[in-house]
Image (cartoon, rainbow, N blue to C red; front, side, top):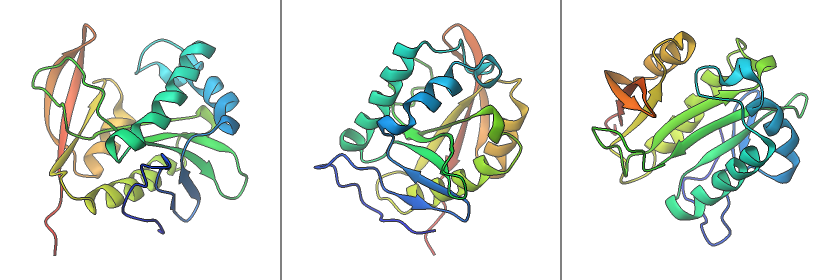
Length: 187
């Protein structure tokens, strides 16, 4: 994995990371059509909510771009190296969600992959790189994620990477699981 460990917020650039099969980089206009398709796919968003309209997908892209200069972390667009194909979104945010216990100020991990990319290990590969990057940052003692209880693949992925302390919380009127991962001790 290659990548810097600081965000150049003057330019609003995400930290570019590379894994064996993926490039994790700032979202751009070139991903918009694929992003629309992915977030509009009922089978992809079934555990997240309703399919997004084109306008909602556009607002999501803008939100992703805005996270980096404001927080120093954010979401990456995942691209398959071999094909150049858009794989999905993965990263960290602070969405100021109205849940108890509060998770404000704690990086919230999230991921969503295009339907064609499910079951190929891309989420695991990207999450490993993203968490390694986050663990190298100062000021973040833990990270969290919110996962629908019926989303078995995402729960298994989160648990594989150390997200624990599972508790049910109410989010947008639905029961959701809140998991927390403590940053590993520096060696």
